[in-house]
Length: 459
Image 1 (tube, one colour):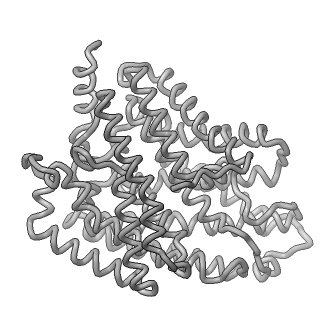
Image 2 (spheres, rainbow, N blue to C red):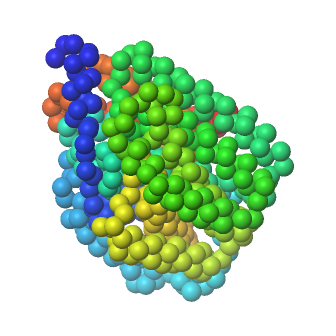
Image 3 (cartoon, rainbow, N blue to C red):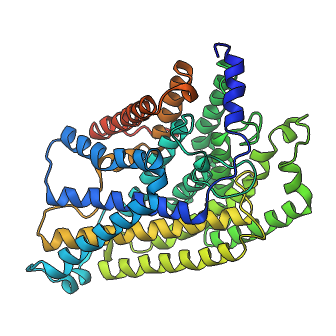
């Protein structure tokens, strides 16, 4: 298959009309990844590694490789690994907190304050999601990656459908509504580079005849345009009503749902001609209100979760927050499952069910990560290990420090790999080696920048 155009059509057809996975499988997969992260961080308490290079190698072996394996060769045994790791994690917690003797009791540690300059559970949330996204954007081009995790054609649940939603939420969580002076002007300037990246992305895809799927965002639209418009519109609304982000989110989502029900939703997912700029990019444009409501809701969540207690908080209060998040996630999950046969989620529309689905996952994932952080702090204090409470896996810290750059480098390397190799035609072994080399290289770049204290956030 030497003709680039024929291989491009073959590749596009391979990723067309996909129906996705299930709620249960995605929850199991994310839960397993989170337990891998917990165990990786626990190993840092038990076995001190001093040099950054050694720490990075440990991160690759204990976190990056397992994540790749769960998404590829172990994708059919996720439930088994979930049970194994859950049992191991529970035994570690019981042993460390209730069996091992220590001068520091659990009750006294729970009453103590934690003082952090940054919230490590937010760092972990942003970075875990970014790492999975970057792995998936290349892995999906290989047959070793299960197609049920690839983006759905119209409606359904899939791992890759959650990527853009998670990214929107991670941006909203760290938005400080107390700093709104000249917010609109600052947001306009800050989002211009995103628009430029979107234009570069579109031009490069056309220039190198790279495979693309018009049903993802549209003919000219892409993720960078969506992120830029959502962040700018969010800034405009927050500048006008800084205390009412949740009200704004609910109102916009309700109006968006009503508009989709008038027939706009059917038009977006139809085979209607793409004869003008609006129709050509209808997925990207029509989905903006849904993503905007998700962004505003996450701003409200971040206001309570991140900015309410300043830099000091009691562990007991933090545990209470984690339990509230899990309760909220479980409640929204029950609503989602109850209406599963009535109104399926659609990433292309960013409809009400999709927003609820992403919100559910975020509440559950953040809640679990927050509780894992509390357990790690408790273990470190009982062991009297001098570990900074805001510390996390080195690679995750590095990804968080240059989050968008990490995603951008992943996109560039994904394009380079696809230009060099007909990914769908290589063996499983070679596929795994390429995915591993690509992921390690992307992580190594941001880790090097982080260790050099270089944060490239000009956007």
